[in-house]
Length: 397
Ligand SMILES: Nc1ncnc2c1ncn2[C@@H]1O[C@H](COP(=O)(O)OP(=O)(O)O)[C@@H](O)[C@H]1O
Ligand SMILES: [Mg+2]
Image (tube, rainbow, N blue to C red; front, side, top):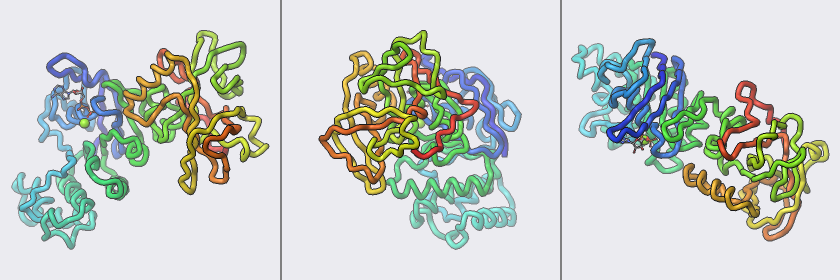
């Protein structure tokens, strides 16, 4: 096991375009690190540079404190677990796990001992004589991990291992990988474009956009204190709402009327004419069911409710609104780039299951202003982010 350290890593392919652009990242020994971002942001390239399948254009890659830039993949002793698990169909589970030991011509007794040990850990003992084709997806995944375990690899590297499984199996495998990683305590780097996987698996998540590292933080901090519009829009489903606001005398004027930011969220807006107010779906509530004790922390405004989606334990309301043309264009661009659900000029808000707000009606909606973020639309920066000390947003709405 080992720590992985990246210092100013750059990768330029033939055409000179930086697929990975000046990334510095410290992955601790035993840590589960997720690399997440939309397709094409450089995740696989970065992972392949860790393993040694791709040359590093500039910067330094350290594994266990040793520079590995010039080392061949086999000398880095890392285990890459691919999407298809790369199992040999004609070999038994035993021989699949034993494969790296056979390559190194390990003596039979050692092979037996180490494969049996790994199989026990992975609950594969009774399947050792079977062929991969007769195993479930979860068992195949474990065989692939078994192969990495007998090699005593320094780290596990995964590149979207679950992306071609159906939703249910993906959920099971996610739990499996997470459980095994904790049990084994092996440094793990896991690439995904799926923010749900990113949020549920990792100790920390590194968010990439166009080859540039945006933010590295725990899932909770990413959700509560995203540093910019991109991270805010990428993490969370349904995504954060972005409401355009014009900065006036001590207040923000929005399509829903004026809003006064509370002390805890106030930022210097003197240099800004227009900002985006970011609000998660759960920061809204049907004003009719908001308790009096917290009502004053927010603002209430009338909206037209277009659609209600009732899911039993929760419900979502869709609230369209008018926004200036340039803001619409900007939101549409962000939406395209995030490949996300609509960040259109409509709010998606989560309502308490007891709310009786009706589709097609006008109703008062409440927004908890203690939980909003203020973004600079020109730079995307979150002006309210306090990444050192996450704001306490755990109070019930
Ligand atoms: N072998 C290659 N030659 C040239 N460009 C490449 C090569 N591999 C990837 N790229 C480019 O580098 C960028 C990052 O690709 P990749 O790391 O595969 O992204 P991700 O895994 O995040 O989807 C993309 O723009 C992609 O087109
Ligand atoms: Mg990829």
